[in-house]
Length: 202
Image (cartoon, rainbow, N blue to C red; front, side):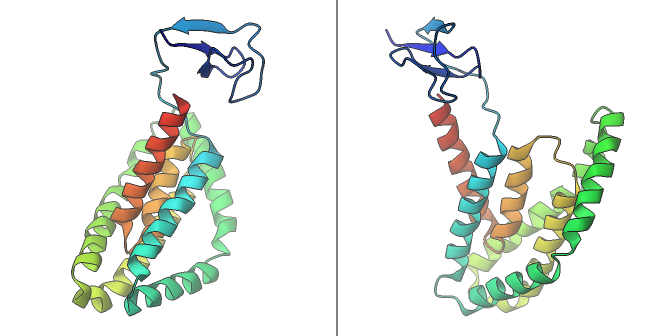
C-alpha cells in the first residue's frame, strides 16, 4: 500500500521514501506517516504560482487572437500602448489597496462582497465578446475598442481592490482581462494550469 509523509514544517505531503520534504527541504525527523491516503485539502496558491499561471494564460490567449489576424495584432499594439499610458495609475493602486484593505479588515471581510459585484457583469461581457471575436471575424473591427476599454477598466478595478491573500481569485480575474479578446481561452488556460498545480501538490 502506498504511503506518504506530512512535513511538520510546511504541512505538505511527500513520498515516504524521501528523506526530506520535496516542498521545503526539511528532513522528516518529526514527519507523520499517513498510510493509504492523499492530501485532499485544497492547495493555497502562492503569489509566484498565481503569477506564473497568469503569464501562461495571457500568452496562450494572445497567441490565439493574434494568429493570422490583422485586427488581433492591432488590438495587441493598442493594448500595449494604453497599458504604457496608464502606468502612473500604479501609484493610485498602492493607495487604494491599502485603504480598502483597512476597510475590509474592519468589516471582517464583509466589504469584499459589494466590491466584487461590479466584476461579474464586466467578466460576462468580456467572455461573451471574446467568443464573438473568435467566432465571427467580421465583427472584430466593431468589437476592438469596446473590448479594449472594457478589459482595461476591469483590470484596473481588480487591481485597485485589496487581494487579502487570495492570489488565486485575483490572478484569474487579471488573466481574463489580459487575455481579452480571447478571455474564454485565458480562463480555460488558467483552469488547466491550476489543475496541474493541484496534481503536483498531491
